[in-house]
Image: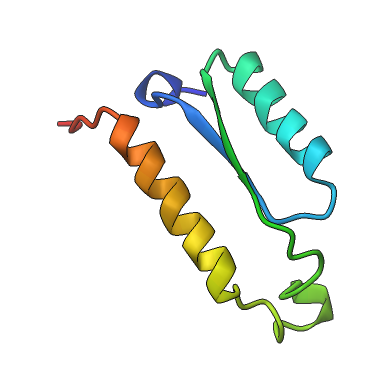
Length: 86
């Protein structure tokens, strides 16, 4: 991946029912491309809600899930170092 040096760290996020496999694959990909993978991760179970093959109805996040995302991002960005690319 030619842009790998521009990536500071991968943060895993999954809404799939097979989360363990998904997160494992994300970590493996990062390691393969020599991109660090954060220990922080967010898992939201939506199963097939909003799945394109089954129709998009039902794919909306609950208020509780939205709050989990807000808290996760707040904690994540509090630790992050940002830079600009020229």
